[in-house]
Length: 294
Image (cartoon, rainbow, N blue to C red; front, side):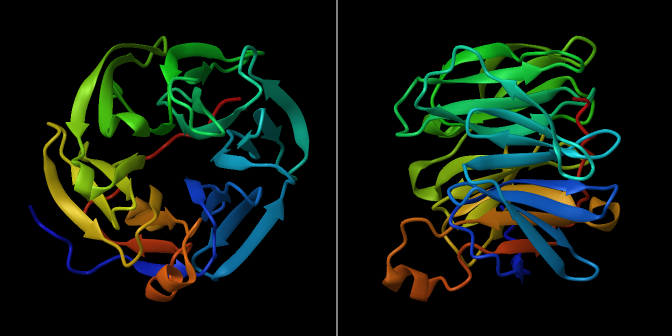
């Protein structure tokens, strides 16, 4: 399959221990993402190169723009709903979650519903779940139980498919999706990643229905076509590739977050850009992701 020979280039040396949950805010023209263990949210404005961050004092794993301004933040024990000034409007708790769990990746469906997963802090298997928060709802609804490391979420251009990664399974699953109701059914394997290629983590969907999957410890992002066939590879000069999101003018760039957690000095010397944010023109624009309606 084709390898993109113009590799992703670092655009910001963020030094993230575990950069995750990137999202493009079309209203401000900024990329947002989290550094999970540091409890820090980053934002980056590509035209000016201006970068800012905010420390929360506890783990944060994803940030999503809200309709009308502000953001929803996946935090240690729940969702923080922030207004346009960054003030917390409310906190959405997740009833029934074990004390040793935290929130993981998050995504927004075509109707603005917010989806997120949970996982055990010690990565114990089967202790997480996948949730959906509907507009106006006070609490999220559990959709899938007994997941292990809930990660990538995305939807096909027609909204009829939902993609979901539980990293422990080493595959991307697909579910039949009803955009009108938010019901997801018929979970089944869609694409399996071989052991030597890395562990599937975050994902992004392009305008043609291709699914770009970040491969942790694999040094690459792979594109799987709408039929689940691996048809393109974007190499990176770092191994801890965590997630990706389309952004920029016309959603023409794929931004990729990375990490450096647990790396030895020797390994860091070999991968000096570890923890940076990368960007690449992959030849196809991204699929717009609506702001969440929470």
